Each structure stands twice: as C-alpha cells, then as structure tokens.
Amino acid sequence: MKSFNHLAKKPKKILSFTVIPSTSNRIIQFNIPYWLPLFSIIFVLSLLAGTIGFSTSFFDTKAKLSAANNTINNLQVEKHGHLEEISHLKGRTVEIEDKLVSLYEMQNQVLAMVGLEPSDFAYVTENSSGGEILPSILVSRSNRKSILFNDDIDIDVEMEFLDNLIGKQKENMKKLIDDVEEQLKYMDALPNKQPTIGRFTSGYGYRISPFNRRREFHKGLDIANKRNTDIYAAGSGVVTFSGYNGAYGRMIIISHGYGYTSVYAHNTKNLVGVGDRVEKGEVIAKMGSTGRSTGPHLHFEVRKNGKSIDPVSILED
Figure 1 (cartoon, rainbow, N blue to C red):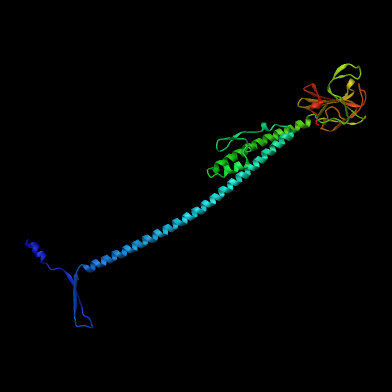
Figure 2: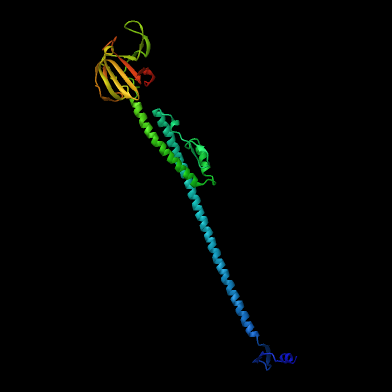
C-alpha cells in the first residue's frame, strides 16, 4: 500500500508554454501533457499515410477500371469484327452453294444432252444437322440462306459440310467426265445417222417380194434416189467388208463396236476398203443398183449382236 501511494504521488510530466503578448502585460501560460505532442505527430502522420494510401488505391482502381473499359471496348470492336467476318463467311458459303447448285444443274443438262440418266450421278449426303440432302438442289435458295444466317448455326460445321460436299461433287464430276467421254464415243459409234438422202421405199419387216410376189422378211431399210447419190457411214467404226456379195451386190459392212454393225448394199462404187477407220457422216460409197435390185437405191441394215434390228428404231429424226 505504501508503494502504491508512492506511485500515486509521483508528479506527472507536463509541458508548460508561456505566451507573452507584445501588446499586453498579461502573461499567458498553459500546460499540456507530455505525451500530447508525440501523439499529435503520430496521429497526423497516420492520417497522412491513410490519405496517401487511399489516394493511391483510388487512382490505381481508377486506372484498372479505365483499362478494363478499354479492354471491353476492344473486345466489343473485336467481336463486331468477328461477327462481320462470320457474316462474310456465311455469305461466301451461300455463294459457293449457289455455284454448286449451278454446277449440278449444268451436270444434269450435260447428262440430258448425251442421253445419260441424272439418277446415275445423284448422291445423297448428310448435312450438318444430320438430315439427308441431294446436293443442295432440294433446298431452296431462300431456305438455305435463312438456315445459314441463323446465329445458332456453327459456321465451322457448315464449312466442313460444304467442304465435304465439294469433295463429293469433285468425285462426281470425275465420274461424269469419264462417263460422258464414253457416252460420246458410244453416240459417235452408234449407227443412227441417216445413211443417205432419198425416198423410203421399203421398211423393216414382212413385205411382198418385188421379185416373186411372195411374203418375205425384209431385214433392212430401202432408200431410193439417183445413181451416184452419196452414201454416208451411219456411225464411226472400222470397215470389215468391202466387195461384191451376191444379191446384195457391191456392199460395205462397218463394225461400230458396242455390238453394232451396219450394212450398205447395191452400191455402184465403194470408196473405202477393209480395215479403214471411218467417221460418222463420212462418204463411203455411191448409190447404185448392183446385185438383185429394181433400181438405184441403198439397202441399209443395222445389226445388234449379230441380229438385225429395225434401223428406224435408232435413226435420228
């Protein structure tokens, strides 16, 4: 207890300040605790440090916010650019599909010209949605555009599908070229060109013979005209016979391939020999009346795999 009282009676440290105004004789004196100046300095420094820290944090946050806004703006510009690019790609996709449709239509026109069936060259493929289509032709142009410009459509998937479609069309075109070339060879060889000009005097089939008035089967087509009228090869091929053959008189036989042969009889003169390659429409003989004949005419036969057929069934109009 004595020790506590001793501490209690210990004088407190204070700072005394005396102010002597120049205009007054009165002296002003005041005391402050010894710790107050130090506390004030610490408080001011702490306040200053807090202000500086807050200011630094504020400006740092402001800078980050500005950078974030710039990033957002840049991303929006970039997004807009990507959207424009995607729109352009979709537009190009439509253009490419339109060209594929045109190619497909041209393909069908070519097939029609050479007598091939379009169904032989049609292929069914799956589109990006899993549905089956026949090379875009079954989808209207407006329909395809509305599908492609749908935001839900994945342009990469569409482009992959289009690339696959182009690949299939390329394969189809290669096959088309090969088959068209073969078809053109076939059409050139087919003995369907009228072999001469003149009047049809006797057709294919049964008739009354002009020689014995009996019913007989006439295996060809008779075309009458003046002596020395040009006779043409009905199709391209190789001459397998050129000479005199009894009742047929002076005669030519041409092998066209594909099982076809053609016969030209009663000629007054043959202009080609065995082994000669003749082109469709080439003059091969002159009309005459050799052999068993009632006057100048061409007896024309077409044989398929060794059997006679009606020439009219394949002759061009």
